[in-house]
Length: 532
Image (cartoon, rainbow, N blue to C red; front, side, top):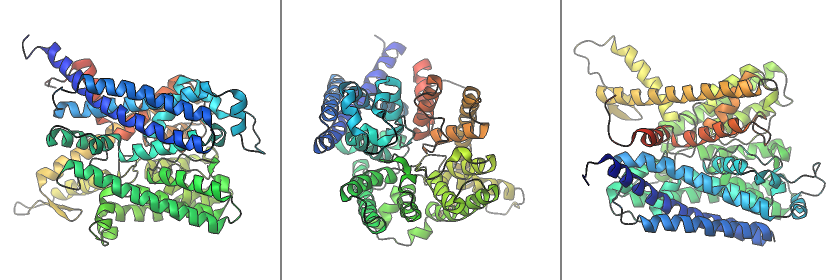
């Protein structure tokens, strides 16, 4: 057969992609074993069995794919985006298996034992996961660090499932491809670099990609451990009567969810459940820590460059945005005179939205359109720092667009002898570089906006009898920005079509859209270059 045969090229692409997916699924099977241990600790035997069975099935699929195509050639540039998009989809799809198996394995009377004593409800939310689509949604929300949930009453699903959701967010935060690169040695540094650069967290810290991947996980683990200790001690001081065992469990889970900016909670009404202004203040720091970039932490921890706190343009801009955005959000809520604690809720929800963490202390359904639109555009649309676990267009793109617009306007007033360069983040950028970066940032922002408004319109058409357009815009932005805040639209009773749309948005938002479009293009048109 001719080497240029399109069918052969397409077959080779599938083999290359399936091999890499296989390695990701092997990692996923290991990830799935960890919550089984937690289930055993809490004597949740059906959950433990469900996690182990899921791990076994996922391992069989992953190892079979990896071994079958082990000798396939290394990925090229045209394969990298396809591998990342399809790999994340496979992880989210099979990551939903534990929810499904445990929900069907666990008898109803055992499920009822998960319901906390004195709870106002009598129905375990584990029952919702007998629906495969809900399992897929929950898994996609977990691994993309979104935080929208089908578990109406979180404590009623059991400690094992609660830990799995938080752990999945933590793993997904730093990136599954990054983890695979740290564990599986690629046959060439070039292919590793391509895969690493195609994931949205792919900022290289060290000359070798493998060492970069390992450094990222070390930094990520260190900051998570700090948040864990911080939350345990803080909760002990603020709520001395809170059971210590619950403090440990909640703090560990919330530290993982905070550092990954995932926002899943072990509590029934998220952080609102504590009903404490001091606890609200305590949880501001983990959200802000999760929004800063991992390269920033690397410079801070390994290179002791403490001036990066203000020197780094993203970190500095985020600190300023947190302060002034929270102030404006609070003033809007005060003016609207609807919520009981406008300053407290305004500060917490703006930081939660901009960091894309998604912990909730306010009933956003009651907010007026001005507050909703402000938090969507000023916080959820922008998000945190590039190189962090956040969603949105990222702070660096927002700053590039802002800088690029000023540069374009000022360029009209340059003389022939003017050196037409720009300065950004302490670096001098040539006109061609500035134009390229500005074009890429603007193109991404436009794609993000188009997808967002398309989804919000569909959401409104489906839910208009119960929710306003501002609520629909908020929910769509929350899914696409991987935020996880909700106005109540996300619910087990929601339209399956809308549920699938949000799954697509969470997937696209986590991978910054381009890999998803590249996969769709490859499915319908192949990987051969075409003139457009």
